[in-house]
Image 1 (cartoon, rainbow, N blue to C red):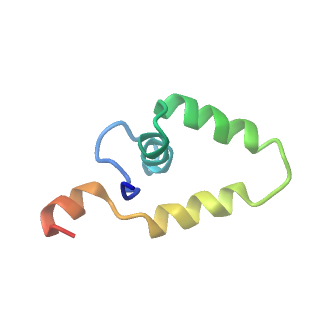
Image 2: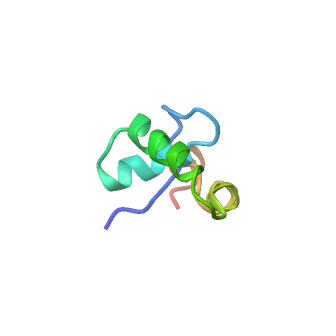
Amino acid sequence: MAAIVRPGDDRMIAGVCAGLARRFGTTPNTMRAIFLVSCLLPGPQFLLYIALWILLPDERKVQRTGW
């Protein structure tokens, strides 16, 4: 199972949707659309996005450090 990282390319804000899209085999735009539609439902979507932004490592830093 591949680790989820925020890619250095194809990011709009933080790369969270692009990283999740890579992991689940879909396009980043599809993942962004899913996120936007999920915002219509009650729940902590924005808090989850911010948490993933903080917790997911940046691919550029991972490549430099070899982590």
